[in-house]
Length: 444
Image 1 (cartoon, rainbow, N blue to C red):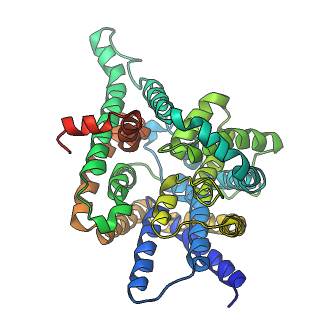
Image 2: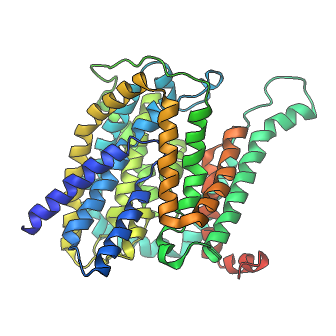
Image 3: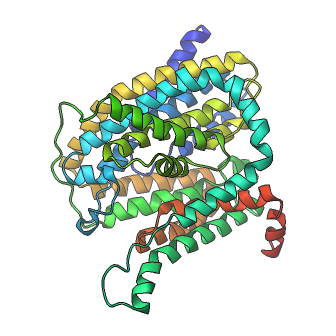
């Protein structure tokens, strides 16, 4: 079989697989990629060597498909309690008003806009501009990360203190969520120092060192919240068209493209952080723009970070997908870059076409089955994956992360504060005093 058909087949299989897996709440594509890398290493032990054309497009298809469709469970399987209906994200509001289909498909349109930006704007310019940009900003990366940390903490706002008697009790009520957010950030940062300097994960699984912690911080609390929620999902209306126009798409592309590009280029900055910064920078208030910009930002962040790994002359490793692949393969020539771009373009088209039928399928599923039961099954799958990759010690790390990840849920602070697990230790290391702090903590 020629290389062309191997690349095409690998892209198709990876995209379709990830699109289906993206419909499971809490399941992350990096967890599956970690298992696939383990499988490739296992084949190598038996002298079965797969060509790069077999697994690189497969991985690209998985990332594109997941980043395009993982909004389906985020919108359709994340029903809030009735008392929180006016404090939740716009996607959840759409769900509770019976418009979950529209909210999901809007993110798909945003993902398609992100794919256009990535292929037709960023890809041609990346080999020219990114090496120059990297050389200029490299000395200031540590300072930039500290500015981002400061903004994340300062932009947390009080969730209480609006009612009740004036005085110290009202002050404490207002500061409850703020203090919980700062405490969450510091606890997650402490956990990050431990995993960075004295990780209990075996060296063979070092490329999945942070995986059980992230599952505990983000995926498990979400599944538990779905399982324990008292809310019921209302009947969902299948719309024939979307309430968007060219101006809305352009505004979404500008906001989401800025956030996704920022997150894909800077170290330890995720799509959520990039979206937060871009949302404040562009001052978008339209809920449609917010929903669509998240689709743009998410696709550019995950797919762009993976694409940058293959840019000739750049040598940039950003995002979990690139770090997982780094130990397996080192890009050699422009051939690798063009192959990945082709795979991304094909995967983007396929995943967008799969979005509508899969969204309809999940809506039918939640009509027939309680979404709490679906979340319970997803929780079991996630825990099993953590055990298969990192064994019992990974489950322990996951439980610790779950305890930290539940703090924002219980005290109505932002879950973004859990990213202190990456931001705090990396910022300290880039500033030169990370080892000193690790010594104070008796980690070295």
